[in-house]
Image 1: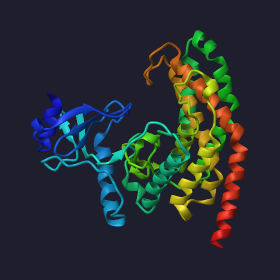
Image 2 (image 1 turned 180 degrees about the vertical axis):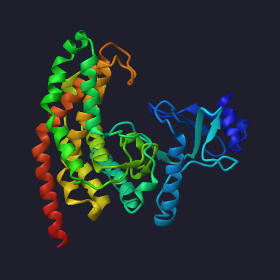
Image 3 (image 1 turned 120 degrees about the vertical axis):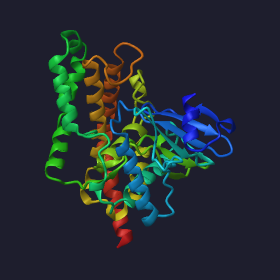
Length: 359
């Protein structure tokens, strides 16, 4: 068995271990290896990550930096093979990593209370804060232009120009809505063109399952670091707002279930700001709410573009699924926008209260 061969490269006697699929990730395949010690084995998806070596080098650089600057931080780094290699490579086309399994830790797939949102936001903020002085030029871009909203909009326009008339007709309302919200794109372009936001070490995939909790659901650290690269806080905060605020996820077909939990927004803000502290710039605080619109809008573009391109990126299980996903996210964007003023007032009040306490 292939997986047995992989474990042998790490010096593990396969007779002593049991291998079972693990987790809900959609990109890489993951297994739990149970035995005298427990591990996580993961195969990198080469169709998404074209340069696995870049991921391995990024992780090694971050691990070394944190070992010296934050030795008590739990950074779950890959274990080297018996030959000292960062990955196990098979036939020059398959790449595997082995991680220690953190005992008494848990992951969750959906937010059930505000405290979990706070803990997750604090962990993602802490990760970026601890790496605030890391030299960004050392990091590889593992997914170039991953969260470039201008690129996603251009891809959408290209898809509209090549899609068949039937698809354009079915998606007409969603297409019109994308242009209705085009101000989100203009704001992004202004922020980037005028360099109003600092580049930071950003995780880029802040779904709740990428946070490791203890048995009492206190945050321990962030995991799944393949997408860590230079970026803007918009990506991490925006992805949390997109995926944590509604009990209905992007696969929900009953749009009446798509609601905004405003208390969850407040928890995310408090958690992220408590970890970032004074490292968070005034501009980042000003555009904290905008980050949610930015990420939701980007996901609308990506789903609708894939629908118009005949579903070549996202896996589908029924006809029109990517269109339904886009419509779902448009509903979320509508609901988020309705809450936007209350979010901004909360941030103003929170900042005023905090500044007065400090002074």
